[in-house]
Amino acid sequence: MSPAVHSLFSSEIRDECFSRFRVKTARPVANWHAFTFDAETLAGSCILKVTHSSHRTSDQLEAEVDWVLFLVSKGVRVPAFTPP
Image 1: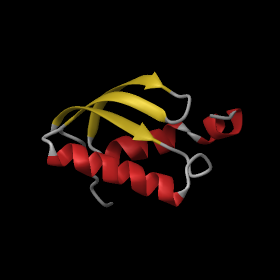
Image 2: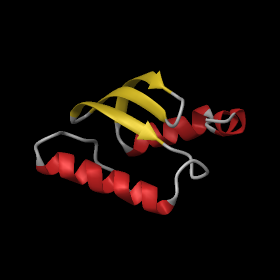
Image 3: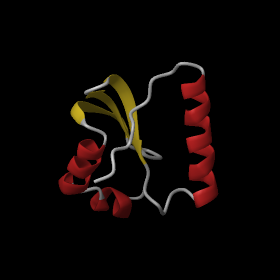
Image 4: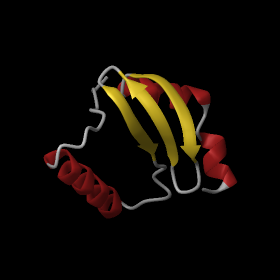
């Protein structure tokens, strides 16, 4: 991720992401292509990935969502988005 994108990922944006996914605690595990966290939510442990719009196209994000939905269909637990 470029330094410009890193500077955009403020603590306020991070906290908003954590709030939407009901993250209680999180530990960063990567920040190369996305901000990835080992997180604990109300539903249990998960990996939370936050990607900036400059890094992925809509089609790429849709493909990632399709992949996550496939994993869910196989019993893998993922955090659920809660609209504000």
